Image (cartoon, rainbow, N blue to C red; front, side, top):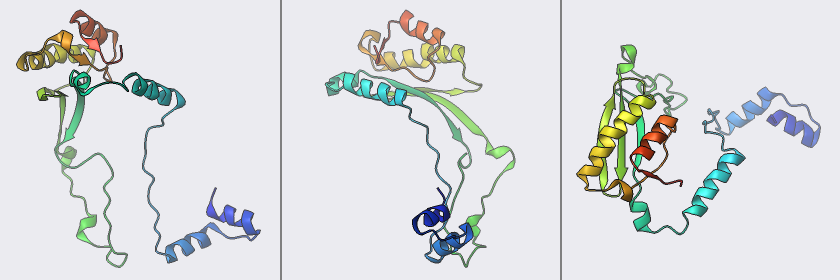
Length: 183
């Protein structure tokens, strides 16, 4: 509910939105954009709670068996997020308010990598859009090389589900006897 409506409800006086805004600005308050965050629905909260309860008694040695993997995009210059800077109201021409750009954004790099208790594993550059075929190819190359490098056996490792939960990726994990963290 807008502040003007709240004030009307409280004291039955008509106050415009502009008047409320001016009063707030006089106290040196400023308007800022709300940050976005994913909606955590009841279903997701339940799933997260069940996961936590299932692993409540895990020891450090249990967690040492988990290998985490993910993909990420690295921008060569800057970020995809909105840049903000604080400046004095009187100095609106401050050079820090300018964001320098280059044509086509300066480029990006897509990577897949994994980590475990022992450290950083093999990583790979992704040159195209990642799909289930490319994902299973990466698992077959980089993940298996990482296991070999650290002298780990597949049966001693837990691989958590990632964003790629396709039938082919699940079949690849089953065919290679990977145990899931969620089993």
